[in-house]
Image (cartoon, rainbow, N blue to C red; front, side, top):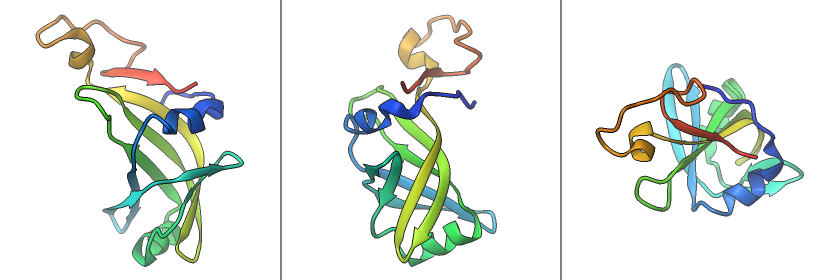
Length: 127
C-alpha cells in the first residue's frame, strides 16, 4: 500500500535507523546493496552504490530504500523514489516514505485484526 506523506521529516526519521539497503531492478531481478544515505537538499545520496547497482538505476530509475527496525517488532522504514547516478553515487529523490510492521505486532499475537487506514499492516506515514 502506498501512503502519501510529507517528507519534511525524512532526515530526522533516518537518524532513528542504522544502515539500510538500496533495492534496484533490471530484467526482473532485484538487487540489494548496503546503503547508508545522507540527506542533501531533500535528496538521499548513496555513495559507493557499485557498478551493477548504477547500471540497474540507469536502466530503471525506480528504487526503494529499506531500513530494518532497530528493536524487535519495531517499524521498518521504506522509502520509494527515483534515482539518478553519477559514477557509483546514487541520488534518490524520495516519492513516499512509510513506517511499516505487521499488524500483529501492534495488536499482539492472536488479537483481532481491525482495519487500519486501509492498510493490511500497522503502517504509519512519516511526517
